[in-house]
Image (tube, rainbow, N blue to C red):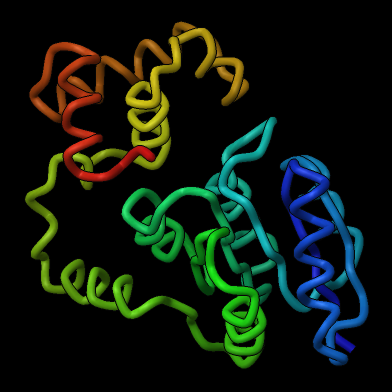
Length: 210
């Protein structure tokens, strides 16, 4: 009996994931969480075999949830399943302790394969991502400006490039407008840029936004 907790703010996504996983007779117990707080609460209250976690949650970043869980439940396998591309978050979530990363457009059979692999203690990555990680280890991508940003700075960069205002980003991340403005200033300084337009152009060129 495998217990799977699905953390995603869209009910239709949670239902779809349950239907896919239910095709495997070994996966028979499911739990659901629609935000970061609920996810942390359920992980603390019950024992789960694997957590399927979305990056974008309404009250916090999935990256923050992942980091918190790696402190509290270091042995819990976390498979990140996101609408964002591998170029945006895959390397970061794996560095933060995730057992795998998948795009939501992946084929259903890949999800079952990923679950089985992480349950055995392995890491699930696509061939493209494996190549990217190899480059990371070799230091080949260290020259890219966005790689020196902290996870929160990177999150703000992606939101700015997506056209969101400072106030919208503050609400999404449950932070003050002043804090987001500080992050923006740090991003511009670290990346040697001066305007949101430059940040947006860079993000589009490097496929950091959809």
